[in-house]
Image (tube, rainbow, N blue to C red; front, side, top):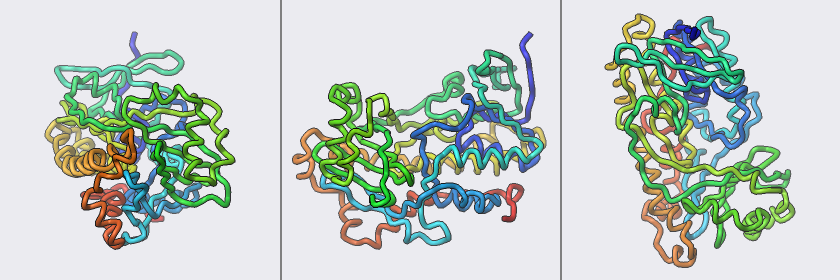
Length: 413
């Protein structure tokens, strides 16, 4: 006989969106269960950017002091690979408020912080090593999920509301047959680590050569290194020794010369299949998608985590009362999409502009030809007038329609 459990809200996916939503709803006194298919949060090359709006949120939740104890570095300037080299396009130090930087912190530390806070709430349950494999439907609506644990146990969890926060390859949105609109992207990204020395540059570093466009993120004892490659060229690029790829970076960043052998195998280089998409409708009866499950973002600007967290805050704010009263309806889910749809569209529009007008030429086969192409006017203005860099810094750091913690979730530090 299939084991059946019940909760008020079931959140699938223990990433930033899922954990923030679980914490907020639990603080509203709602029974909420979060499912995470892995045994822990320790996975390399997840997005590790924590934007000013998320830092503000942590303060509002009473978690700012605990976050400050985590090992993080500050990213104060943002650079963009262009056909003419790296261009500084955002200056976060010009932002108003306490948090005028992006914090670079291992995502597993942030998730552990959120999980520890949520576990203090009596209605919160976190189920690790538990994977949602399909939806449960009753009377034409989504009523929960079927799950499988790492030990092979199966069962189902029924809920008044199921929230898909399970990423860009969401099992739940596929099972629901939700319509996805895809947008073409010109790039994929390789992620790998390079050792970092004390006398290296600090913060975010951009490297541009004839062959490579590279962004290096300071992670204290190592560089989290992102190499931009043309879409679909991964297999072809891997036919050369991996050391040759690192040497092509060191050729224009000589301080890396002593580390060309630090990447021992192509197995150490992970591919991010860059996608930009969004659901035309983020919900169906009994099911809501948020974060990457609703809208996959490009890594440009590192805004994906920020958008996902903002979705979670909006969802908690709008749905806490109907969930508590047992009246949550499809119209309530529609309110979440209406609130977060415009920020998503605007942000993706900006990413698509940069893809087409800046990154695609920068990744062209003949960089000299690409350099002959005049940079878009907004980029030229940013290079000429540094004070204008506060505008993209605000767009990246705070975004459109930033969300704040609802009153029921706030705590004093």
